Image 1: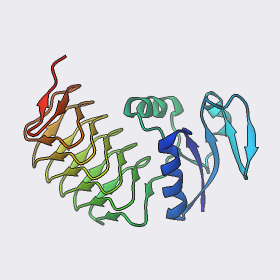
Image 2 (image 1 turned 90 degrees about the vertical axis):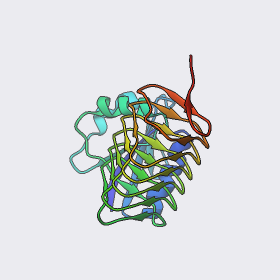
Image 3 (image 1 turned 45 degrees about the vertical axis):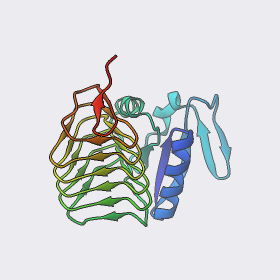
Length: 205
């Protein structure tokens, strides 16, 4: 068992911690979040402000950023610097031996990752999501519950794909673009754009 420090104490953190515990290869030793104002110990784990993170750095301890917001997660990764990250894969997820899941990512229950797909660092593949073959997902993205990413799709940094959305084969989603829940994406998305509907269309500001 390897020790892990969790960063973040919100709703997403609850799910991440349960996945980690069920994976059975890590032990959570503490949680950092700025909602804590001082160091305390509770149920065999410590709680402390995130701003105090440097004192907890160790060559033998792994970290995991359990923050749901993509931009915030990416910013914390920069703040933490050169720490090593756990990779969390729930026991009920199906991950091809030919797929790559980079450190700091979580694969939630019943998700499927098909051959030759790459899940970038600090990415969330949520409950029941399907990532088909040859999909490339950049860092700090989030594929929401029951979304389907079909073959050959390229997903940029910080992209959010909403629940039950479908992205058709071979498309590219620009950095930090958003696909709304239930949308069907039939063409590439622009960086920073928000796309909703069937077929998905860009919302104009």
